[in-house]
Length: 451
Ligand SMILES: Nc1ncnc2c1ncn2[C@@H]1O[C@H](COP(=O)(O)OP(=O)(O)OP(=O)(O)O)[C@@H](O)[C@H]1O
Ligand SMILES: [Mg+2]
Image (cartoon, rainbow, N blue to C red):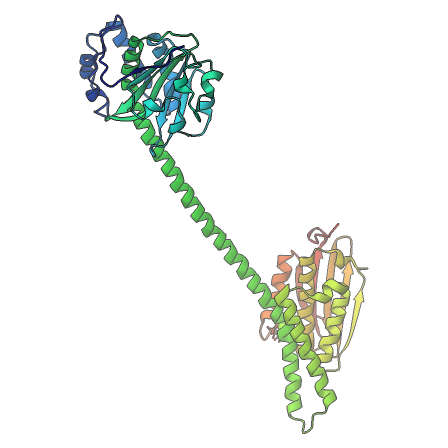
């Protein structure tokens, strides 16, 4: 089988029995836009009226088609009236000049379904590079022109594309792609078909040029929108992070307040008392030293994970007991205390953040009782029922002054912590005699118990 017939640039258009297509290329392609109806008619003159009407039909079909695929599909049938074919494709060179895309009708091959491919691998690279004015072959499956090393020519075999003709799509003298018609039959295309194809290519080229520019603009807009979305995402992410950091800062602040600051306050008071003593024996200083060590240890805990380690290691009840014992001892006052736990360990099966919040509330209530009540007894009750978990801290001191002298960070923190775990918080006069009672009640449905 012979190789491709190559139409050189000097080839002239000829009169054919399908009509003279003496198109002035520089006017059609060079203008970069549509010729007027009069110009168009003059250019095609004296094409037979039937052919002229076919060209006008193609031109009409193009209108309103907004992507390559629909353009090809819309005009393929009309073009097949002029150039019979089983497959038609339009190859468009991308703006980078290195890659091209393919759009096909009526069936899709590897060309159309692949991402942009290198022009240098295209079987019709000579047309795309402008080295030849047209390519015609009687059997592309056997023609070596299309099967060089690295050529993307598989679809020729897969699609059984035998006779093929290729003409460039030109706009303003630049090649923007190629129009190809193929038939399963061998040896059907003549020079006349090539001339027809050129005319059709000239008709389609400006439209494809505009589509390519529009697609490029669309791609740029998408890239820009994506970049903006990324920026916005980062901004929102940073905002969320700031919020999370702020929440964490508040939580650490509350922990420092409820635990370490309270401990240090007690120690400072004891130290103050010691300053009035002429001789301070070693055994008096020893609890202060231990207290300071506790503070340091607690600080480390807060910094590391901000969870009370006793709570994790020994459970809720033990942690409360430990806090009561230590705080009362460090206060240097004589205070009796009792812990009544009726929960049978139920609080320990609560979610960790919930248990921690309850512990912090109890801790501050105990701290307040020691610091402000002037009583000599503190009772802590832990209870669970079907419907709720509750913690009560009572003292037998002077009670809250009415109106309250001030609501400090401690009471506010207790309220906030309770709200965060959907628990009810109450602070009142101790019903059983003098003093103050705080109660926090966690409904069972908010308990989030671990299975
Ligand atoms: N058990 C209590 N008995 C008597 N008065 C109390 C008791 N608990 C709190 N108060 C009073 O309520 C006030 C507010 O308590 P809150 O815990 O909010 O602040 P604070 O303990 O004074 O300071 P902070 O907790 O911020 O170190 C206290 O100053 C105290 O006057
Ligand atoms: Mg307080």
